[in-house]
Image 1 (cartoon, rainbow, N blue to C red):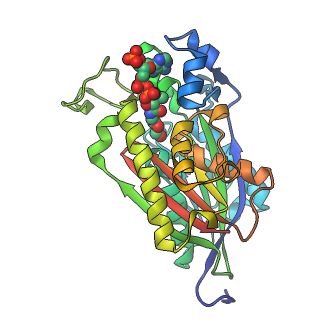
Image 2: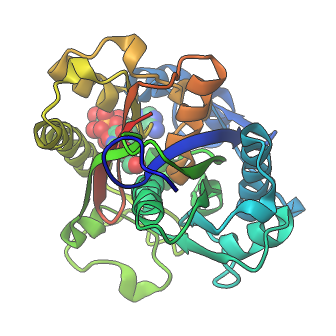
Image 3: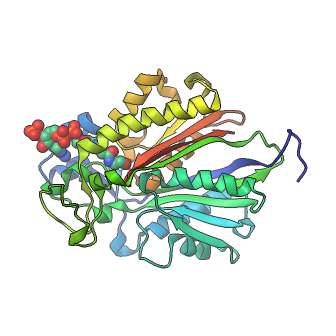
Length: 338
Ligand code: UT7
């Protein structure tokens, strides 16, 4: 590949897509399942409705991921056989093995390329897209499919004990196709990946009794269901979200005004508002779609990105900052020159 811009390989996002389950779970539906209200949910989170996959009838994480990848390949006008690697950000693999990556690669018709899952919870897509950029820039891979997909509702307790998480989460998937380009100005400019396992106790899914941290109290010790200390996660998210924006801007020598789109993990509209207020980000630069989908974990960022693309708001030459935080605890950023 010839170099036209002073060294190295660039990376372009040449296609994107989203795929959501048909089934919905509205605030009204939740009112019938637990002690909550539409008014409370809208006021405290900004969410009106969310999608819920019909897992019992085969609508699994792999199915959502496959459909998102198929559409992203079509939008990129790339055949599945052109992919050199497939990476899936998910924390809700259908079963311990095969990975969602292996299933998607089979279903969309990839060659026998590498395919794997990466688990960093709600920060998963951000970690994955950052790694994909580095792998392309290393010269080893030319075209990588990147997916964020989760069916988190299978791990939700729809009773009063689980209402903190039940109102927040929904299912969904988004995908991108990344490709090497001669224009080395394109691709990731800067990124941050952070994790602090000390905070794991605030947001986790226990598999067995010993997974419950001793120091934390729980209303009901339900296995296989999201256990969340909402206030602790809220505080962490507001703090780290702002910190990582500052870190990333400082490292790249840019100001918030230089960024065209802040593509943020959708966890609670109040968390997004806190960052907008702190950095003076106008609402048209930070799309909020949480009212429609809730928190879709790994799917959240590529879903927001694709909605911007579909609306014609994403243009070559723009700068986009992807931002996420979530269980682990994990958080980070990935700043791109399109
Ligand atoms: O990817 C990261 C995923 N997780 C997050 O981002 C979670 C971040 N945290 C949050 O979004 C918020 O903490 C929640 C939405 C989960 C909860 O909102 P909050 O404003 O932090 O509520 P709270 O836990 O401080 O509870 C305030 C009141 C309490 O009642 P009292 O004690 O004041 O009478 C709760 O019992 O609201 C009550 N409450 C509810 N009421 C109706 C808590 N959950 C609900 C509910 N419906 N679902």
